[in-house]
Image (cartoon, rainbow, N blue to C red):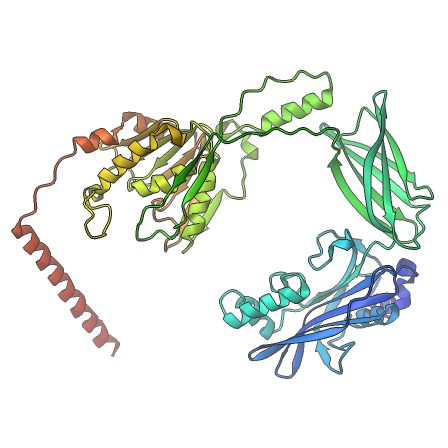
Length: 568
């Protein structure tokens, strides 16, 4: 259809008569605009068609100052023909009158999608209320870049206070985060809920002799006639796509399909000869039985965070300790469907190097943190909580607070905690800067290791080792057979600069190398007990330190003056 024909097709409300005739009697027009320099820019609009059984919302309008502009949100209930006429009149015109106020709205260029008299099903319309279930949709899409005032608002919605308030204000009134929905900014949507059915569902109505009968029925809207609808069944089995069958509904709007061999997953579509596709339910499972298994935690572990300068996570970490599940004997079944399900679950339960190479992608394979210490700590804790056998922390700067902050998040009883460090000089410094503190960092780590061996805490073997022959630079976190690489030390992730944690997709070689270094390293407790004692500091050492600091301060001051002179 050419452009002129499309324009004529959408020019009058009669163009929709075949799709909506008698189904709706009112339309709710919601409009959000941004006014600046005497121009009313369209932010968003929707026309919601209401069946007779749905009450009308009240008309109204609200405004909010958003210096140098002003936001308006309005709602007007119109007769169905007037609502459709206003929607269609917005197509391909630069401005359009507001249906409830004597003002013109700047629209830009809007084009219809679909381009003709058609409605498409969508189950993800962000502003659609729950009673719509799966509404039909037509929309006018903005074909031009957004006006500069709207671009300023979207770019500043996280950093500029007035735009942050505007974002929240719009969310409360439109019931979706408009400024974050690029596909709806500057556009208009026509929403048509299912006019015949308020809901529909499929159930297994009868069983016997290796067959099952699935019945689809719905809740009719007031005054709706359901006979003559077509129900299309489509099955998905473990082995692949199954049957595709069509049945016509009876006077009660129900239709049934007989499926040989039992139903695995079944979806259905509801079609009307006049209105087209009204519902599309994707394949889903049926519950044939229900069982419940309980597991009581064997204890609780509480870690009170140690004080340190850069930590922002001050809440105690409370972790429930769970007993490892008993090994279940495989259930022998004669059903091919159930046997195939068991085998597929075994594949899904594989971890680490045992997973299929093409299935190791994970949306959390890479995480970046910038000034997000709390989020970084929670992310690492979630990784640690997955461990079922072993946790390995590789960090040359690991301290006692790191063990409390992360290792205590292990939930499975008996998980082995391993750490690999290359002791720096900091282990000889005081663990706390508080007055009267005398414990050294190394002493505090040894005390933490001893404390974690308390049986009531539910840990497995605690094995912290120090490597003095092979130096460590990078940081790693091993969770069973998964390996994560970390750019910062664990006590610095997310504290300031950008920190990145990434999962190593093929960790086999690295795991072998880390195992070799760990096996060759000695116990940190033994290293600390035999550590070389630092030479006592003399008055001469202190004077030398003071002179170095003074020279550094004088050099920095003269450098600043020189830089200032060059700028001048």
